[in-house]
Image 1: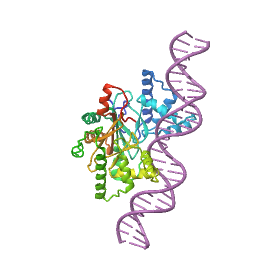
Image 2: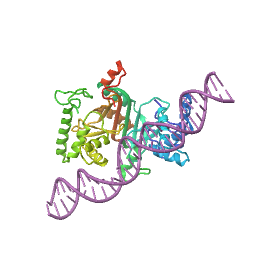
Image 3: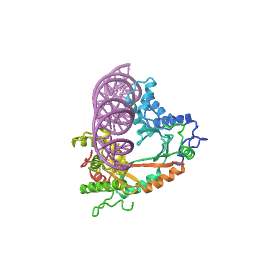
Image 4: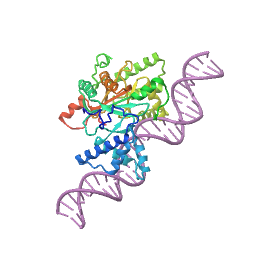
Length: 181
Length: 181
DNA sequence: TCCCCACTTGATACATTATAACGTTTCTTC
DNA sequence: GAAGAAACGTTATAATGTATCAAGTGGGGA
């Protein structure tokens, strides 16, 4: 988990990517990792599943299942909701995508090959979501939970607020942003 | 927030209430606090809203909006979904109920009169939810977020796992529990 | 080679959760 | 009591998620 803040060489990333970052790199990297991970595990990354992963990675904004469905249909694919949900289930099982509970939507995981604790930063201005390491939070949560005799299985940590970029903008003006929803 | 672990005198509560606790006390206390808080604030706790709060407090399990709707209708009330959602919105605004994002359901807040950070412990065996203080988690989350230049607005912390009681049962047997869903 | 089996996908129907829009009632204030 | 605001009723619909069963696909062993 030490490298969680570093992306491709030359493209360091601190939580939120830069506005004009080379997103194709994010996609390529995600698909590359997915491919090798699935091969390692003997999991079948079929073309449908691969396509859904690609669609989730179209941006750093969470994507709804029905947005994916619509795009698949535009591709000419005969898809119905279960198609999408099944693919998403597979991808989640493989740790390739996460579900943002408070948004009923999905984002790609940049660290599928590293065991980690997810903490999501959700920017309410630009709608982007960043995943950072929540190990320290898990520690704090565990202490609290242990005091109550609670045995943790899974942890959901989602923060709403403003990313650095949008926060900076808000200082000066209250205009809408580039890619606000 | 110092008293968050203590309930009515004589009925100390460590996160999850006892199996055979006097739940009427929880209800009475919740309604009492709601009444005085709303009065203080000049908020109108109408009979509908009061009734919805009561229904949320029927147990320590999260309640779905449509469960509430059904119960209202059984009461003879002409209710439709917006009725329920509006009442819930009011109650949430007043801090009287919380929404559990990962369950799309609602629970009563035992501490509406204290400013606090919510951390939810969700037992997957008995379905009950306990709310404990997440101040330390907020601190950890804030440090992480600050490092990313993120300005936190709201925090969602939900833990799934086994409460002490169900965990103890699981050690010995794998039978279903009393009130598993 | 061919069959069997497990896995994946297609297809239909339906369940669950949530909101938009607009009219009516009720409450408060003057 | 009239005006305005807040709450509620009502209808319709949007958005999200599952159950179920049938059909296709691909790989390993007789």
